[in-house]
Every structure is written in structure tokens, then in C-alpha cells.
Image (cartoon, rainbow, N blue to C red; front, side, top):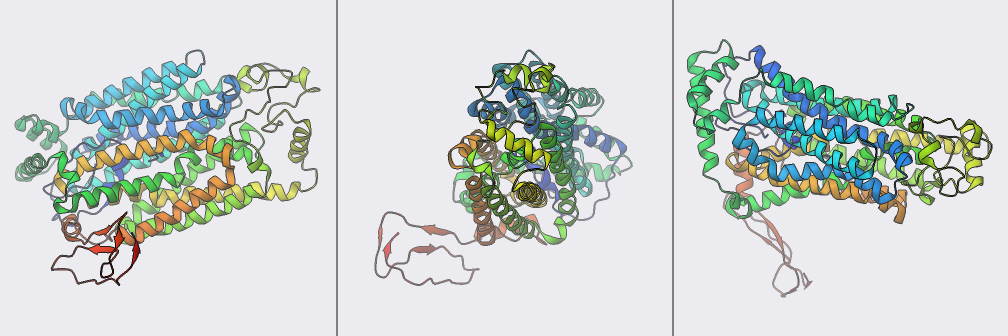
Length: 599
């Protein structure tokens, strides 16, 4: 992302309007109740619902591209005999495109509008997909994935902003949630299509090509939809914005439309008063808040979710699912769990609060990763690399020609000298290992039952991990991000945090296979588990409880909140403390015990 990545416009109060949100990362921030706003009498016409559904197809495309990665990777590494680094490049190219557009796409959104940005992104997705359908090579596949990544990220940014800006205040959270639901549905479809086409010759081409359907459908719908009223106001066309608002609000009174127009104008004026440099200043504790947001998305990605999503099928093969079809089918369960796990987050976030979800999710993720690490430690997984081709180089035939369904050739005449596809172990150069694998698949051999139990324990652990992420870190990180920054600078702050999110997602995905090759799968799982518990401590100590508070109350408290500064590289004097607490008169005094030593 998930997401890398992962991993994603903020909530608006009655005087707030949306700013540049670089990715889908801000989508779930709108689940937060608008407690500061009085009941609204504006309407919600059928046009708003249609526009929200059409824009949410951007989430479907992004989720689909994320979900298909692991299954397609199993096929392509046999077709192209990809090394570890080449597989990481193929996976990371999509995230690289997302990172590039997250840093450069905001300008185009503000200049040309949300609808035209979604149309442009549809063209990028179509162009990148056509590159993927060309004769297979690492260069064309990586370039095509990067272009598709740019398109899906730009589309997600524009879609979230567009929905938030056309939706009435009391329906904004519900309508923007459609985007996140589309993302997880897209992930499910990506896993499912990878499994469906895995047995077909060149099945990966069909999997890549199916994304053209929602891209074309969205482009056709966008020509019929109105522009964003907020964009029109920003361009100085208030009269046209008023007409669009009246169309979107249906039966709403003229006074209600004019009041909403004034709110948009006030929000834009407030945003213009805040510069980008303020994010890095001590004003209203903004620098501390920015560091909090950056640390939160960094920890979100370093718990391993983008890797376990992108490399789900190879990982499942390594723990006992000894065929591409079996591994792809098992990984399809991840998509189902992601959809189911998102539902309680949407329904209960207003009652429970994001902090509680984050804590429970971090514990569940940490425990499931520890279990997965222990199981893989007891199996052969830690002795082999996840990135090795199912066929070794010393076999009498090349995997590109005979060992993959994509080749379309019959391997029957070779079955006496080599194992058929799906029965070869990762390192096919060892005949004894291949024979052991065949016995495992047939249910024979010593210890097979134990290893059979291990693969199911591994699958359950991964499903628990995915479920925990789906109801906690997946949506709740961006709920918190939408709440901890002031209204006028929130869009700029989320832009910075989003770029860090994509960069961390890219770094994690580009190093996963190399890390498993160097230190083994169990140690990687234990490392991710450690980061989950670090995240738990971080949330408990530093993330504020926002449940039941308005955005203004949260921002005011964070602006006054005491900071914890740690001095480094200087000896602490006898009457000095290691920590300096900056207090405000409204807060109670905290006097730490004197410490001596090096700080």
C-alpha cells in the first residue's frame, strides 16, 4: 500500500472545506462525526449518490491493482525467471508511481479540477495497462505498473476530494466511506481474478486487462457529472458554484444553499491564511503534530501489511500450499477478510473511537505475527528464499517454456525426469527435496501431518493479521490524521504525511524478499511483530483520545499540550532532569525525578 502502503480528505466542520489530499489515505477521515456542526436542512439528491459511486470506482481500481500483485507475481517470475531484486522492482514500480503523483499531483488538481484529474487518471490507467499487455519483459511490465500506479493514486486523490466537496455535510462521512469500501472490494477482486486466471495460458494478461472496465465506466460517467462547487469558488466563479449547489442539494431551500456557499468561501479564506512553512514551526504545536502523523504512518507500514498483501501468494506457497492455484485461492481469503473487517470500523468508530481500535488491532497483529514466526521457524521456510523460482536452473528444461501454465505447452513427456508444475519445491535443484514435496502433497511421509497443521495455522495467523489491520490501522490511522491538524492547514499536512506513507510503503516492498533471503522468514515476522508492539506503546502514550470531541476541541488541546523533549549528547547536571516538560497554565504541573548520566 499498503500500502502500502498500504496505505489514502479530512473531515470538514461547518466552516471547513477540503484541501489537496494526495491519495486515498484521507478517505476514512470522513467517518468522524461532525459534532461541531448543527443539524443541516440541505438535501442530498440522486445526483450526489451517482457522482459518489462513479468517483468511488477509483478506489476499486486501486484495490484491484494492489490485490492482483501477489498472484500475478507467481506467474510472471516463472515466465521471466525473475530474481529477487527483479520481483521487488516489479512490485515496487506501482508504489513508485503512487509516490511520484502524491508529490506532484496536487497542483493539477487545484488548477484543472477534480473531474478532469479523474479523467486524466483513467487515461493513465488505460495506457499503463496497454503496456502491461505488450510482449512480456521486465522493462515494459515495470513501466506499465508505474504508470498505472500514477493513475490510480491521482484518481484516488481526486475522488476523495470530489466526493467530500459535493456531499452534504450530514452525509459526507457515509458517502466518502464508499471509497474505502471500494478499495477493499477491489482487493478481493484482485485476489479472486488472480486465482481464476492462474491456470490459463497467459492468465496474468487477463488479470491485468480487467481494470480497463471500471476505468472506461468511470470516464463515461464523469462527462455527465457536475464540477465541484468548491473548485468553482476557488476559480472565482461563485455564481456557477451556486447553481451547482442548488442542483446537488435537490429540494434544499435557497437560504440553505447560500449559507453553504458562504461556508465554502470562509473555508477557502482560512486556508489562504496558512502557509506551508507553518507545518514546521512551533505555532500551535504544528511541528509536533506533524511528527506525530509521520510517525504513525511510518509505524503503520513497518508492521508489514504492504508486504504480506503484495507477497501473500509466495508466502503461502512457502508454508505448505505447494501450487500456484492453492496459494492464490488461500490468499483470496485475505480479500474476503479485508471486506468483512472494514465493516465494524465503519459502524463503530463514532462510538468506540479510533484510539481503542488502534490498540486492539496492534495487539492482535503482534500476536498473530509472533504465531506466524514460530510456525515458520518450525518448518523448512526459514531455510529457503521466498523469491526463488519453482524450478531450479539445473533442470533439463527452462521454467519460462514448460513449468508455467502461461507457456501453454504440455509437460507430460517430461514428467519422468522432472516434477510437474505445482509439485516442485522452491529449489528444484534438489531431487530429494522435490520427492519430499511430492510426498507431502500426497499425504505421505514422516511429519507430514504436523507440517499440514502448520500451514493451516499459518493461514489462520495471516487472516487474523489482515482482519486486525482492516479494522484498526487500515482506516483508523487516517481518522486520526484528519483530526489532529487545524482546519486551515490540514490538507497540506496530510499531503506531507501521505508522501511519507507511500515512500515507506515503497521501501518496505522493495526490501521484503531480500530481507527474507538474508535473515529468513521467521525473523522478518518477529521484526514486524516488534513494530506492532512499538506502535501500541506509541498510540497509548502519544495519540490523543478524540472520541466524543469536536475537531475544534481536539485542535485546541493539541495546541496547548505539553511537549516532551529529550536532550542528546550532553551530560546531565546534578540538579537537571533528563526530560524538559513545557507546560501551559491550564495544565497541571508535572515534576519528574532528577536524573544523572548521559542523555
